[in-house]
Length: 157
Image (cartoon, rainbow, N blue to C red; front, side):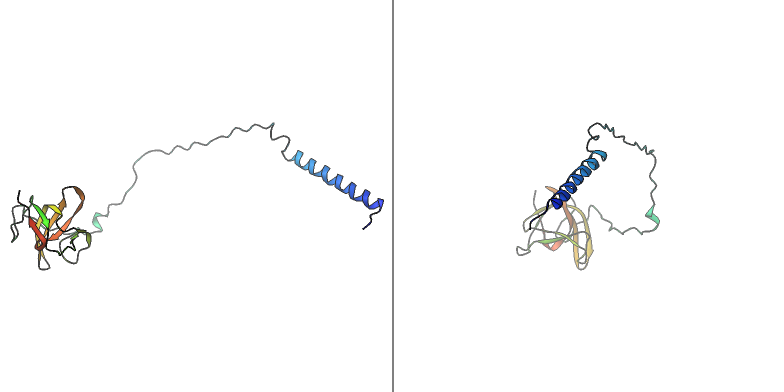
């Protein structure tokens, strides 16, 4: 492809025009005057007045959950009573379900290990053919719930 002098002049002039146009575009659109421009950002402050947050009393919409009444001097058939320490036993090593309420249909919170020690905190409550005691682990207050008396053995002080 041999180009004539006329074609070379045409393409050279086109290139010069493009470069001049690009320079003018950049110069007019902030490339040169951005460095001279100083901008101080302004933050808007919104003051929110304090006050009482309205709440809804749901006490009338829900019925209270019945809780078993506990006689602190009551004892079960095995002599267990409130404020005694008991040990989990007789589970064959599989542990004992500690439940959120007395009864076999209540949700299991965790499984207490065989030989684990608990303080009796409440009870007795008779339900589903078992006598239930409320237990709490003396070393971990989050490990608490209800257990059937058949798997609890009194620890002598």
